[in-house]
Image 1 (cartoon, rainbow, N blue to C red):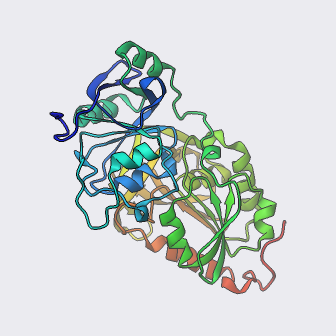
Image 2 (image 1 turned 180 degrees about the vertical axis):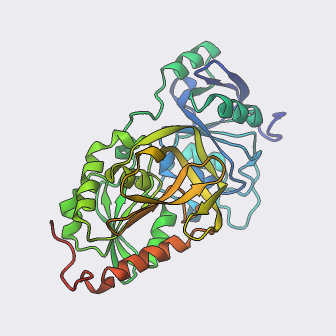
Length: 384
């Protein structure tokens, strides 16, 4: 019997950061090639919703450390999946529950990760790890049953998310149709979550298109609105996508709504620049103030990059993070376009920001609604 998990004996394993920090634990989940898994270590502060976090495509290239100590205690079920499979590079927990108890559960977290080829490490002192990442920033790591020297070498050779196009690894390869609402929305899939599609589907019939779709092809679909989804990696590594969004911005007639990576890409298309945060924002408890209403929202967040405040052009800052002052929302002063850095769909997290989907609907209404005409009575879509 394992002294850490209480029920299952597991192989001893190590977590080694690229800066040399070492943590002892035990292996669980899938068995990686050579006994080593690598990725950029980040921590997430949610108290529940671990399955939604693990299946969020925005975590591609990253190893997720949960600060909440007990993970897996209510099992997993298909209804909580944000994507068809996890895209993260691994999972770090303090205490893994081997016997989940919940009426919705259809299996254990370990079986779920094993089935999808994701390795994990349990028994880690996640408080020490989180403090280390807060002090030194997110860094590449390696974990598994290999020797400490091999893990350190793997961590130091592992890639961070800087300069990497990770969107191409998670985007859809074909056009999909979702939802049944009266509006027509074209949604760029940069790593879109099921919770986003559910919220948009109440408003619109959604045409989900690959990340490489051109502005011309999007406008030819005659949308009432365009949605820019969340996704992984460095927005500066996506010049082709930014160029197409800039064409949509220059067209200026179809409302645009961006979330997370979509927010960063829209801001860049509007002339701003982005930078990497020391350890990112990952969790379901971040306070954000609306500069429009003065209201404070508790928000769900998952991002490593942010929009630089000194790079803004014709945009209004609509939301600010009260923890560190990071820009959390923007609106163009020239065209019907707005975006937020956080996750109003809240999968997982609080529902304080769900009103933003209604604001998107109102913006589409102001632009002519689901009638297929623009605000001046002319046909929507078409290339300027």
